[in-house]
Length: 273
Image 1 (cartoon, rainbow, N blue to C red):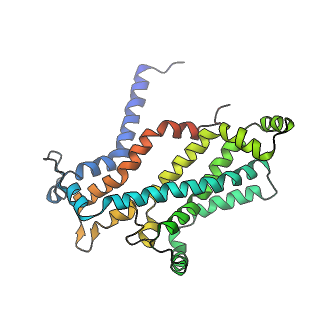
Image 2: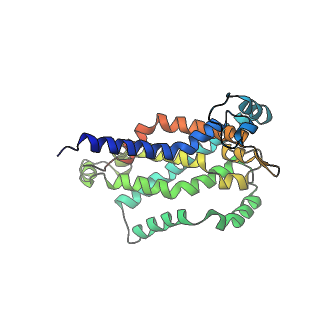
Image 3: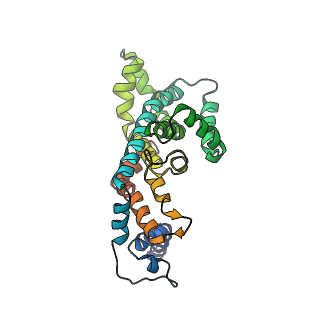
């Protein structure tokens, strides 16, 4: 039975309301970025004002934005490539050659994501200091790889499990070895899932702030730590902080918008057979 017009209008209105509530903080941050500091802290909040680009100009003049942007790109893309290279064979082995403890291993890997990062901050800091990795891109890249590896393995494992085993058995009967099956058959079939896993890993790495703030100073600082510089003992500069935040999340918002179709396609890969 087709829903009535009134019912569809109510559902549509509720969906738009939920969307507005979810994106309101980002909208308000974007509006504040174009205000002066006096306008940003005005009470009641100003809805009509003369926009200014002064905050963006001051940030670009006082800080090397491109340096932080390059660090975010290198660390996000590098950690994602490393995670995919390590995660692919791991997920393949867990999906097609399961052992007695395979499920326990998967649950353990996922459980590491639930542990508060602050609980291992001191040993991690001392380890980075001992290895000379503090404020280095290599150190941050390796750490982000390990942090996102459980999610990468879990997603790839799910995509591999959806591939019918009969296809691999047919290839095996035709004389294809494990490597040939993996490269020539399995990778092309699961490419949407691999692409969505890589996209999600890039987004997670880009948005990570806890480790970058605590383990970097200047050389390897990404955009998430760059935002924290606009908080000082004298107080928060809301307009400049909003402009810096908008410049930090802008690239990943555009990236997410451009790749949303691939991301949704990959995340729903194998959901309907």
